View 1: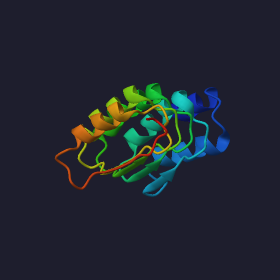
View 2: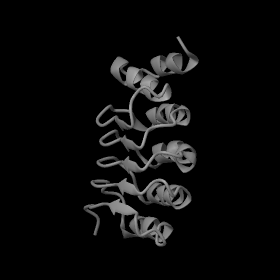
View 3: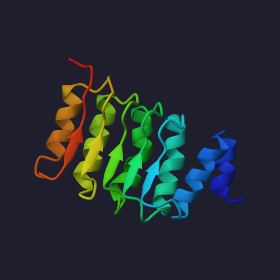
View 4: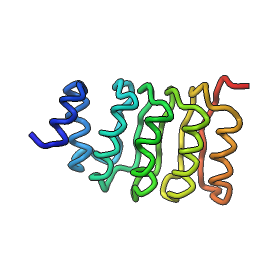
Length: 152
């Protein structure tokens, strides 16, 4: 068992999630990785980041409904900033707030390959967080920010 696999086991990630993350790490998962509803939380984002560092083909990452907060976004930020093939990042229905939105603004502002960011149903993101992202990509007409929140 690899060190990566051992650490995922110790972190109590379920077996199917471990297998999926291992396939991401060894580039055998294809270009779309759907980790929706896997209950990864912030702790799981460190494993997603590590798998992405090894993956040079993924272009779409779906992390919908994983109880990710701004701490989880921070765990992914360096990897996402440097990833050369990721085009679409879906973080719908998580627990991201304006701090996480500002982190994502830095990511999408630094990585021109990411051209779609979905943040639907992150109720803690206010217009301040949305504006941070919009400002970061103001010179990128091809960028799509998909967001609807319950915030005023």
